[in-house]
Amino acid sequence: MTVARDELRHLQAALDRLPLRTREAIVLRRIHGLSRAEIAHRMGINEISVSRYLSRAICALADTLHGEPSNIRRKT
Amino acid sequence: MSQFGERWDDNAPLPAIDMCAANYVERRDSSDWTDKDEAELEAWLGEAIAHRVAFLRLNSSWRRTERLVALRPPEHEIDVSRTRAGGRNYLKIAAGFGLFLALGGFLATYLSAPRAETYSTPVGGREILTLRDGSRIELNTDTSVRVSLNAQQRAIAVEKGEIYFQIHHDPARPFVVAAQGHRVIDLGTEFSLRVERLGVKVALLEGRVRFDPDNLATPKMLTPGDVLIASADSVSVKKEPLSAVLESLAWRRGMLVFHETTLADAAAEFNRYNQTRILIQDPLAARETINGTLPINNLAEFVRMAKNLFGLRAQNREDEILLTR
Image (cartoon, rainbow over all chains, first blue to last red; front, side):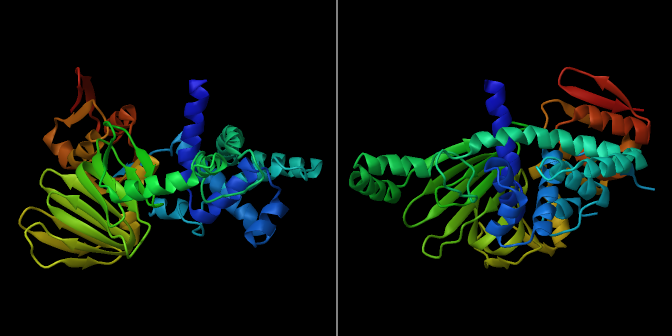
């Protein structure tokens, strides 16, 4: 139970870090369960833009949840 | 290499493979996904290992977000500006019980009375606070602040650590941040402030702030990209590209970004986030520089990097890891 609550808090913090429109799109989709067309209508944009925001949200959430892969080099 | 900016902006471009994979992940989960789409996805996954890796990674985090449905409000009211539970509902309940007037009276007294609350994070911690005025402050590792909001002023005293501010501007109620005797006065803005032993560092991302130094010297007006460093007796301002300011805020997503950073400085920065300290014992390696990103809380990753790039060996002690030749 605590684990589930921690996970939810973790997800919520990840959501809070998203840029505004990206966050709006993912909240409408994941929390309110709206379809792409409904989100497009509500946000006043077309479905392709909705897809783009959702894809962006998925990438950013994956970075927050899994951690970004490290990527480090020595100066050459 | 402004990775931060790329991922954390509504419009900036993302790596094509990630965008493509994310698009499949999202479409596959909706009702209009067809067998033909599935075949197309299979073909795309077969094209390259990188496609498969990106898809699996993004798909698994997408699955985890299913839990978010628990945040859905009980009534048919959509408010995307806040996902946090509570707030509004308390108000409704209060009204329902006819307590509204009483609450109003209480609120008036409450708002005008100075009342400070202290918030802090442990080493390695990170916390976002949403203040009653809608401002957001994000505390980095080992940070402590005192917040007092009243009808005339909003004041934050930073005792130690680093904070990212997103201030809800209100000309009638200035937002003042105090640290080591210096004061930062918000004029509608996003900025970060870091308190170190030898001084205070303020980096402005958006809007404007006024900086009043402790020694009563002339105030400085900062514009986006300005990075100010103030010690007890001197203040300097340097203009940086916004991407550099964003990179210095990579801690908000759990990462550290290094640019031509010496291994010694990188270890010092890393040590802010971890109880176990890393000490570079080899003086030559300590002066070598690195570029790139590392996860903040991952000691093993730092040690692996030192081993792979500089051939250093790790010696584990109780509270420290010595890196030697």
